[in-house]
Amino acid sequence: MPYISGPPRHRTVMPWRFETWVITLLGLMPAALYFWYGAHDQLGADPVNVFERWLGLWAVRFLLVTLCITPLREVSGYSLLRYRRTFGLLVFWYACMHVAVYVALDQQFDMAVLWRDITHRPFLMIGAGAFTLLVPLALTSNTWSIRTLGRRWRGLHRLTYGVAILAAVHFLMAFKTYTPTSVGYAAALGLLVLWRGRQVTRMRMASGRGDMTQP
Image (spheres, rainbow, N blue to C red):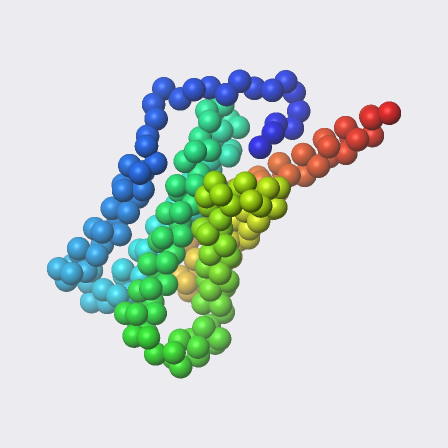
C-alpha cells in the first residue's frame, strides 16, 4: 500500500525471517493440542462446545494478526506482507474447523436442525456470512489469482474488513454477555477496521488533490 504523504520511507530488511511453512505449522499447533485434549477427555463436561469455541477464538486471533500486518509495516518500515497470506489462510483453516465441528459434532449433520439453527439465531447467520466471505478470499490467495484478476484482486480482498466486522459481531453475540474477552477482541477488530478506513480516505483525498494539480 502506498504512503499518503511525505517522502517515501525506506523499507527496512528484517533482521530475521521465518519460512511461511514454519508459521503455518506453528499456527496449526493449537488445533492439534485441543484435539488431543478432546481425545483424552480433558475439555470438561461439554468438550464439543469447548473445542468449537476455541477454534473460533483462534480464527479471530489470526484475523487480528492478519489485519495488523499493514499497520505494523507502516510503523516499523519492515516488509511483512509476505506473511499476510499465511496468516490469512490460517484464519480460513480455523474457520473451516470451527464450522466442521459445529456441523459434524455439534449438530451431527442434521440438516433440518442446522437450517433451523442458522435461520433462527442471528449470531449464526452473521457467522455464516463471515465464513462465506472468507471462501473467495482463500481461493484467490495465490499468485495466479493476483496476476489474473489484476486490480480487481485488491478490491476483492477488501472483503477482509467485512469479514472482520461480521466476525466481531458474531464473537460478541456468541458470548451472550459482554465479557472482557469478547469486548476486547471485538474492539480490537473494530479499531483495525477504522484505521484502514481512515487510510483509504486519506489516500483518496491525496489522489484527488493530485488530480486537481494536473494541467
